[in-house]
Length: 520
Image (cartoon, rainbow, N blue to C red; front, side):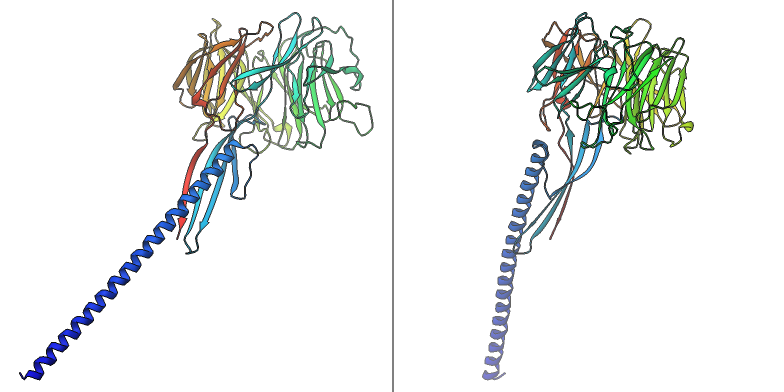
């Protein structure tokens, strides 16, 4: 090979090597740029993700702590009530929170969170005083205690109904066995006392009418609109029993006018005693009253049209009805489709109200499910599998009370289990899938409502004794002054006064159920 040829080969190899090195350098530079961009994209994505999470957490906190909080990023999904009782206000709201964040480099993230939030309803606590001179004492929640607002004295030797109250109007109504309706303001002052015969058509009562039992009083906004009439329905402690309905939309203007037609009186000639009265809406949109009356030899449940006073249906029972009635909205349709009630023989009765025609309404008794008298109000809920469960307080022959759980598959009722408790309350409380009761040792017991498992047993401290208080039966209420309360207060009222117990297990749970991320 000549000298020129060798130089050419060397030059070619140098050129090839230089080209290769240039390509490698180009690749390295490109790789570095790519790595830099990837790093920048990662940082950008991490930044917007953190910003989105912070925003999401902030909105969730605001949703849980600020009453009535609203945002374009929050949408309400559904409300799941604690029980199936018609008009149940306690339960859990489910919300969807959606957050979108973008950067200039087109980095984008979309967070979707579905959360549940305890719905808190605050009600005043009214306690009746000791006999023979009855009084009415109002308490309101105040932190982890109760604040006594006023004590209203009733006339001597007068039995009082449980009060019906309007929180917004700051006016309470109570019916006396003297057939007077009393209005009490938020200061404990008597705003009015009306003898019912003066305001309801066709009624003539003596002031000293025979007292059979304490009167009953119910209030409803019959049209579910604050601009529509507010209706008061009551039962007088006369013999025979008298029911009345009064329009109290303007309680200070009860002048009879052609427009003010929502008043009537219904004399139940056969009734010796009125044991219970509830108000509910049925499938055809009507509001009805379900009244338990006692005649000479039996109990009856009357279904009464609230607008016309017509008795739509009557169910007859050979045994004495010993529990209160509970009407249920089993499918959350805004009306009652069934009701439950129990008698002294331990029979649980289920009435059907699902048909628009009343002559198709039926009632069926289920026997041999429990051993004893059914007391209090049946508690009806749904387990996580969608089965309807009925919780009953039963008193046996030795006066011991226990709680039974029954399953209703819409065709038959079956006994699921019995809670291991000697209860001292008329009715348990269903709260966030927990069943609360009080035992004879003055403990609050918390069960898993749908398995019967005892979860916690807490002592009740009676540190708010008021000797003027008289309660026929112990009751349980859960108080909280926050939407999201980590330590709600359980209040037990009874013959010993008022007891308190903090139960962190009952905390209003603000829980994130789902977490979806979309990004590019």
